[in-house]
Every structure is written in C-alpha cells, then in structure tokens.
Length: 450
Image: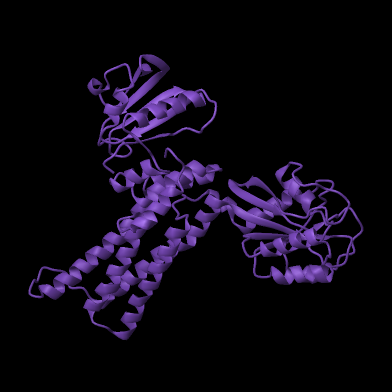
C-alpha cells in the first residue's frame, strides 16, 4: 500500500462530469505535474479551478479537490479531478496520471485501503457496496445503518462484555489473594450465556429481514401451460414483459421482472408451463422451472378456475409443500370447475389476470406473508450478507458449549476457552480478525473506482 492508485470513480459514458480519484503518498505530487496551479501550496479540503496540461496543451478545464491525510476516506492523501464527462477526456487524464507514477486501482481498492488503514470496519465496508447497489429506499436505510456503525456497535458491545468477563476469570485464577476483585461465579456465567443466546439469536433472526431488504424476494410463478402465468407477471410489473397468447407452451424459458412491494424488491420469475411434453425445447424449459423451486423465497402456483386440478397440479403442490406459497386461482370470470375443497388449507387469491381484477390482493398477501408493513417500521439494524450470518451461526454453536459446560459442572477457568473463541468469531464479523484471501475476494466484488 505504499504506491499511489488512481481510477475513474464515475460511470463510464457521456455525462456532464467525470471524477478521477487519486490516493496515496504521491497523489498531490503526481497531479501537480499535470495541473497548472501549485497543488503543493494549496490548503487541505479545498477545491481549485484550473486546467490539466500535457506538453503545454490544455486537455481540459477542471476542478481539483485536495484532501490531505489523515482526514480522508482512505486516511491517505487524496486528490479528485472533476473534469468534463467525455470518455476521451476522462481517459486522457487517467492516462496522464498513470504516465506520471500512479497505478490503476483494483476494484474496491480505495475502500480496501480505508479498511486496512482503520478508517472503517468490515461491516461498514460491505455496507458501502450495498449502498451503491441498493434499489429501494429500505435497502438504502439498511446500508446506511451499516455505514454509520450501528451494527458494528451492537457486536462490539457483546465483545466488550465477554472480554471483561474473561479478564475477571483470569484475575481470579492468577491473583486469588486480591479481595477487591469480583469473584466470577457459575451464576454469572449462566447469566452471560443467556445474554449471548438472546442477542445472537436476535441478530440471526432479524438477519432474515436484512436479506429480504437487501436482496428482495425471489418469487417463482408456476403452473400448467395457459393458466395465465405470463399475464400475472405482466400485471404485477405493469409492463408487457412476457408474451401472452392462447397457445399452450408459449413461454419456454424463464422471463424475469421486478416490482417494489412496501419498500421491498420482488424479483419475479415467470416459468415455462409444467406438463409432460415431447418438445425438446419446451422440456428444457419445464426442467429449468422445477429446478428453480429450491432457490425461491416464495412460490405462486396458478390454477385455472374453470378446470379441475390435474395430476400435474397435485405434483406441483407436493413439490412446493415446504416453501412459502400462494395459490392463485385465475379466470374467475369463467364458470368454476376447480375442486376448491382440496385447497382448503392454502392461502388462496382469486383473480382475473385478463381483466386485471384483484391483482392488488395478491400484492397484499405477499406483503402479509413476509410482514413487509411491520418491516418498514423497524430500525434496519440487521446483518445482511452470507458471510456475516454464517459467523453468527458459528458463534451461537460455540455459545451452546457454555450451556453444556454449566450442566456438566466444569471448572470456571474452562469457560474462558469458549468465551475467547466467541470473541474471535465476532471480531471476524467486523474485521478485527481477518484472512487476507477473504479480504482480497471481498473487495474484488466492488466496482472500480470505489
């Protein structure tokens, strides 16, 4: 991290302004070589008008921001060049920076430096990328809570209690003659064990809400051919995305769309009609549809109001019995022939996709199943990615050892081992302990220039 990096931090394309970011010990010196003002004499945290020059040729009229360490995002000297947004201009300035000693930054390297230099922790770093990718207001709020350190503070509070407990255990063992030191008893261990179980279980439980807010609800529409799946997709997203005809088997591959329901993204997938077929292409589509069931958060099974349930319908009910699901009975404008009594224990919504009738009831039921209205009233202090969630699960398993040890009446000093391991796991969540390969992989998923 001794070199100086640079990258274009705005999206590539034609625009009013592009921003090129430079960070490192030589950032001011490097930009000074191509700027027509003396940057070395300029005060920190100022923005300065001038021109980028190459061999006495003016390349562009720019505004240059100078921010000196340590009060910067990376805790290094940072210079940002605001130039006109032409691709050729932006690339030319980037080329000049590289020619004068800077190195092209890797994806996420600015944020990686902020983490390694202690400016942010790992949860805050991950939340920055989540904020960039957020598609809803709720996912923005979730990301901001991570950036502001609310989640990290919750975890640090748990760590502090455990560290204090272990410190007292060690003092009790090493200096038993000290009368003014608190004696740790098994009742206190039991109390901290209960506290751990409650706090970590709460983190894990609410992480499901965090995942929904961040990633949305993967919603799969299933049913036989010609039951109105594509019409339902089009009605939900209010767009003619899927082709709709009276010909069975029109949809042969998956068709995707997105809508927001109570601030949460619904990722909707319309699938090929489920039936036995000799058509090679249609058969592949049917197999893909069935294969998506395991990955779905919600399954919408569509039946025709004017047809009795068939073997394929009962097979679909069996295949999806462990999933959250809604049964949609379509074509309610036609005479009822469906054997509704076989669906008495299901969540049923009746609609007419053709006449766009009662589609709002389907959205309301989705909202009810996932408690989306209640979710909107919470504070969004959740874990939201697989790495964080898996570590909390690991910490819960170790915390269970404390309960087991209490039941087995093991000596007090033996609890220290498990408490120390829980602290290490929680520190891994916020990045106090980390594996270099994991960090490289994590930041490689960031966008270039961030």
